[in-house]
Image 1 (cartoon, rainbow, N blue to C red):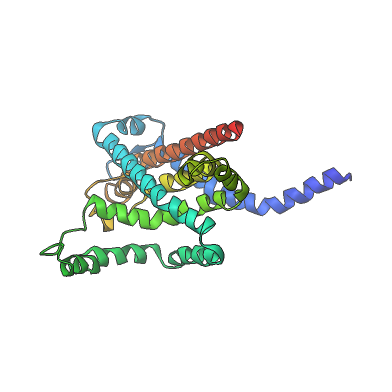
Image 2: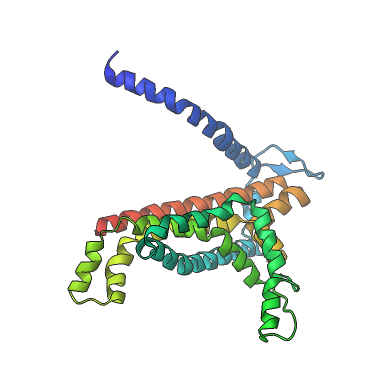
Length: 285
């Protein structure tokens, strides 16, 4: 047996368990959901095998289309806020934190050791009428009485930024950390100020990390479920809430599967746009 054939066989054997797990637990469930999206629903909430595009046509009706718009707006605002907060944090850790940088990165990971629902429920306590935030506002004289913070878009955005900010910081930090500091020094030597050096050197070189951060935040923000329900009161239905309601409350599994496939399509589109933008950035260098 030639060496190339033997190496290929060894590689196939090593990859076989991962490929099998991927097929069984990812590909097959997606195929089942896709098949359900073309099925029909009987009067008792069961799935009737068949092929129809009615489920997808309903997605473009006024009600469901508004859900897509709400989800896109919430994800866009979350992404923008995470980038505005996350980039300075990543910049500080990469360039200013020094030997404390690894410790700060670990501190950002600590919340992930706690259950997601527990962390979001803590914000329910903090934002409540008798919570710490209202207590601080009242004590500082900024408000005369507790303010209703829960059940608002602001509360939802606070929870979203809190949940997804680490996913924004780490890709940007990974892009900033290997930058050659001599390029920044060269900009200063050529007469550029700190702002111009940042805009013309640091920011363009860190764009791949920024794009990755935007992708990591925007895609999961489209389908998040617990945060809008716990902090926003479920007033504005987004895709995650809609899928849960269609599957569990309305017993409309085919339509819920169609919404899931559509959301997966949006995620795939985001990945494609990211890859194209990344290739253009690499071509410009």
